[in-house]
Every structure is written in structure tokens, then in C-alpha cells.
Image (cartoon, rainbow, N blue to C red; front, side):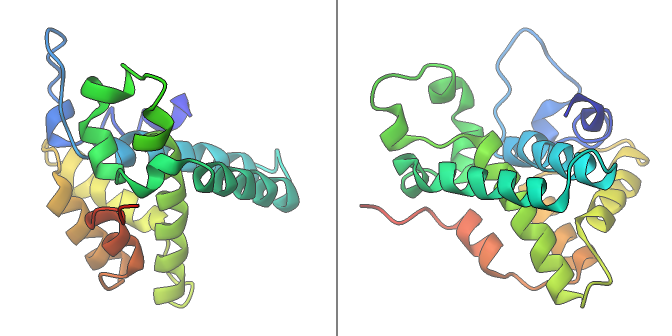
Length: 178
């Protein structure tokens, strides 16, 4: 995971994460992209390098999805809310946190997988999340700027050639309340 951070977060980063001010908390709705998608790429890099089999990769993804499904907080908090609430709630958990919160790492990694699959489906296999990440690198890092939530959403749709599909609807909409 740390290797991919050299690209995602160190170079391609949300507005609130750079330049860094280490004297205060940095609030952003984009930690699910910065951390969660980095986790997604950590897993896929192992598969692409041949260090794990397709079967092992898919089993790991199934466990991650099952883990998220078993977290009641997934129905209460979106990935963006989890990202923003990091300093307020994620690092100050209590006995009820599992019922009211979700990890932006876990939900973000699964959203990364879903985005990648949606892009591949929408482009007939011609594009993937890789193209979106390359676009972000060229459009933001190389031009010495950061991105915001609307930028990321727009860039995924533009470079990934997908419509505002179920992944973005699920992300933007508040989870259904129990």
C-alpha cells in the first residue's frame, strides 16, 4: 500500500491534503479515494505482479465485501461522510461506532473495485480505473494543483467514459436509514 501512496496522495491529492499543515486537522470528503483506492491498488498490484492467484485475489475481495456487509454502520455513513468525520469519529471510536460508522479505507477500497468494474463494463474493457488515475496525475499533479470531490467525480465520468452510475449514486446519496 505504501508504494502506491507515492502516486496517490503524495502527488495526486485532495485539496485539503496539500500543502500539508501538520499543526491542525485536515478535513476532506476524499479520504476514501486517497486511502481506500490506494488499498484497492495494493491488492490489485499483488495480483498483477503474480504474487497471488486470481482465486486468492477474488477470495480476498469476497472477504472484504462480506466484512463491509457485516458492518451496520455502512447503512448510516457514506464513504464521503466517513472521510470527513475522521478526526471527529474514526479516531475516537466507542462501543456504538460499529453501528454508526464505516471505515473509509474498507468502503473506499470496495468503491475502487466497483468503479474499476463499472469503467471496464462501460468501455467494453477498453478502459479501467488506471486511465482515470493517469488522467488525475497529468491533470492535477503535473499542473501543480489538487482536486476536490466534484473534480474526481467529473474526471471519472470523463476519462473513464461512464455515466453517473450506481457507484456514484451510492456514494453521493446518504445511505438508507434503518
